[in-house]
Image 1 (cartoon, rainbow, N blue to C red):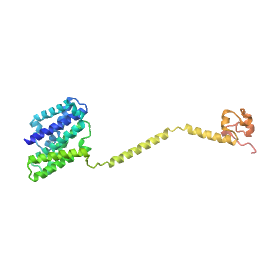
Image 2 (tube, helix red, strand yellow):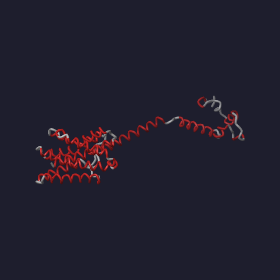
Image 3 (cartoon, rainbow, N blue to C red):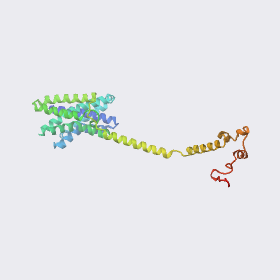
Image 4 (cartoon, rainbow, N blue to C red):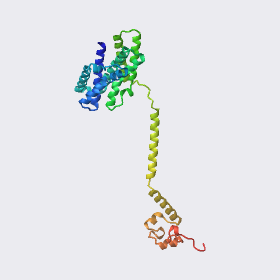
Length: 293
């Protein structure tokens, strides 16, 4: 009887979290029902399939599906649930995790399996429904990020096995593990306890990608750099040197004024006479040395 009560509490809490996740993704009522059922009974179904425990609990007693659907639609009907979505979701999920951890361990031990299989069953029961919920809601599963989650199920299952080996009554053992698992999960949420994150490859990949991107942008900028202004500056510099060689003011030459004639415009003859060379009559590239020079 105590197991049945625990199971109803667990599927009700997880069904509510499934409805909240579906509501956040703006799913219709059919989507709400599917996500709620997968969340509530998905972990237990995977456990029973792997352990060969048939028939499945919800197949043997379909009333459990009714409990899940009622919990989901009540969640939809109460707007305040979405107002405080974050904390309601995390607290209900912690309740479901603690309940399913106890149930998974008890069912595995009851089927005659050893301690290791009992821990695996606890993790599957407590975690896998939430994994399916998050995947179907197009989110990274909560168990794979952030604060302690699967580790809480492992710790609770180990505590249950230790108390069971010490001869503690099953119901008392379940209550102790429920309180421990629920409290540990809440502490992990509030104090941000988490496992170490391995991110070396991610940093290396990001650095290589940024370096490659910067090189591509630099090469593209070099290709698009206009050559006209640089050539124009070079031409103007050569012309300025030539005019200074002949004693002219480049600015005055640009306006046609000749400072040597009182600001009047200089003619080609005046410039040629003053210069004493034939550079104004020929192009720069056509200048030839005169015979006898």
